[in-house]
Length: 532
Ligand code: HEM
Image (cartoon, rainbow, N blue to C red; front, side):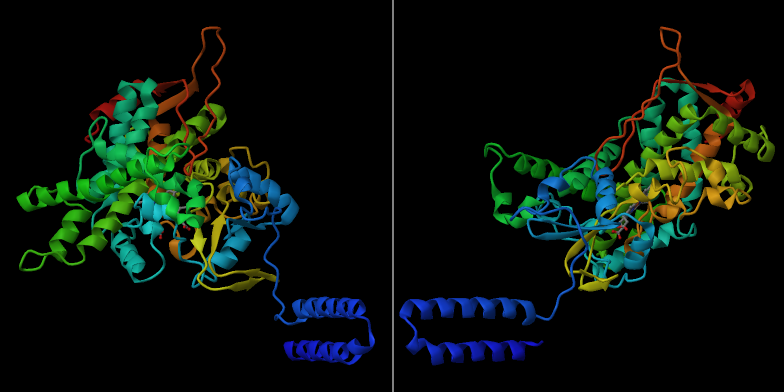
């Protein structure tokens, strides 16, 4: 029944009302009119609109705030798995009218974010992150479009191949620096690990040599925390005028948080770049992304082409590179403490393939499948960014009988995928043999962790290969040279390692109290005598 038919029914009801009203009492006629209008209203509502498909199911919403309070549940990635048991792998929520879709399964994520990437590749604009904290310059926050594509092409040039600047060389050199630092001061292994990815990326991007307590490493860590936590202030998107509240206003913290974040954002965007530019002008900048783009983009009159875009594109790499891989390497240490038999098996493979006269290199990757399996399991159990940065739909979509409205923030739950027992039987177990080519196919029925922890579609992480290589070389080099064991407490029993990940945007893990010793005097001298 269409809209025209409904109008016809209404008209008929009106005519009936008009015809019979004079013969009835005023009270009866009022009642009749009311009933008629009610019936007409119901019919209109039922048939006048073209029938809309439902959005996917999700937890019950409260008036106005919707699921706001449920979205504050910590950790949301675990709560979403519980919701998934009731509603399925697509969970639809609303917070103050904002539409949110959480995807728990790899298949749905591939179908939507990869295969329909033309409408799932933008990013939501949020008042706290984009405006109040001023992160809009980062690639991660830029909506799909021309500027975004230019960012990605500036980044791809360096991350997609080694020809522009060979980052593998820098990764090898800094990994050796890490081995030396651990040999010297094993108890502080966490501090050494924390500065490693920053050392590589800052050298790649700005030709900057990281020092102890390096300012640029510190500000990138702060930046990752502020920008990651900004989504907790979603209510500002509904009441945008609140962003102008002064800092002295009681009961609210966001004006102060926003100011601190703005200062960090400005420092990250300009400080390392301007220092590198000064060095370039003096002629003493090492070869790096900045030196290449400054060289290529300078006009004859000294002005620069596209400076704002390339400095922001490479600045995002600096931020993306500092914090994320740390969590992976710390997970490796934890897993070695918990799985001594895995450590021994990986060391055996290295001894057979690499020997004990040299350190592993990138050329060994294919010959070390078990170590490769260790890296896969590290990525899987670390689930470094458990809830992947939201994608944003630019058009309405229909999928498996559900309507996904335009303007929906789509969040994939990498943690749910990593811990799905249908993909990975006994998912909490660290089992590198899942990934051995000749292993029983039943052990793994799902995707490789590297296919989902780095995101999806046109927004997938451009630093994936960079990070995979870094984790491989660090893992293989440490296994080749050190034994990682539980420390013994004063009561004579082994000390349990720290397994508590932080609850922020990036799952961070602090170091455990443990014993790290060179595997042999030869391993120690290999480290000491290798040229960094
Ligand atoms: C283990 C380490 C890393 C993990 C787990 C990781 C994960 C991610 C994820 C999940 C996203 C969002 C993808 C999406 O929206 O679908 C992302 C975006 C991004 N990552 Fe990474 N990343 C890592 C390392 C790096 C490194 C080393 C760099 C730089 C060299 C980097 C640069 C970026 C950039 C620039 C984006 C924004 C992409 C965009 O919005 O289009 N990441 N990363």
